[in-house]
Image: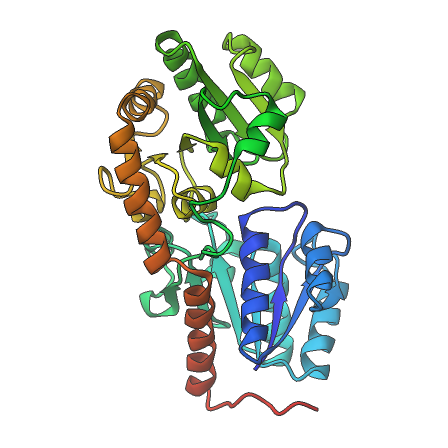
Length: 374
């Protein structure tokens, strides 16, 4: 098959990482893939490094006629079989290009927020021009169906982790040394970009303040874009945690960062579709605490693969942190079962194969076969 992936990629996020893994995986299976995005992003550079064909489009506007024209020309000129859009603007641009060319469109939805209730969103999500919507968790599918997307047009395909990258035998000592964290100190971390308040960094810091009063040798780590900015620094100072919290900012060595942690925390108050930070922490053999929002409970089975707590509840989060710090046997048991769960159910290979199967299903429904190479 010839597949065109469309995405706006202003920064490196889980959506970008999964799109890159999907493109590489499909190509390894013999398919021809291309990326349509804005040049210069981390995703663009990594796609080019991987030898993936790239198409430059401007994605800042959802109704950019030049971008639609370029997409349409590529689809027709390269005889594309499937277009796959991965974010909101890509959804709109892909929909218009699909209307022009007749190319089947697949749209991925990665957050569990309800789509906006306006005419534009209703058209985007309910039109039958979209062949399938891929929800990254059952929670996301439920939101889409409740919004009015027909159940049969939403398929759940879980995001995947590469077991050769995220594994429990990695050594995090170099990261600890770099960040000035002694090997014997308990390190509790949160990996998430600081773009939106719903990510729950404030809840994490409030819980950290409670824990710090009980555990003198605990340290806390925040990793992700803008976590080393002035606003986060101010939040840390206001919480009285300047000597306990390390603000690491963006890192491209997340597997090693996770290996340095004793406990990994995911504390959003809403919105998570299927948290990449949780999935990767589990794959890396880290004990995980997550708030019970979105698809988190599909990864963290409370008391089995991790601990679930109520969102926006610093006291409950602090209690869960203390529980794992004070009971290393429980932490070890949860981590082992979590790693096994991800390894058996949430691999990149499975995500790629499930997506490939969906593409074939769509083409078969339409009586189309992948077009021969020209």
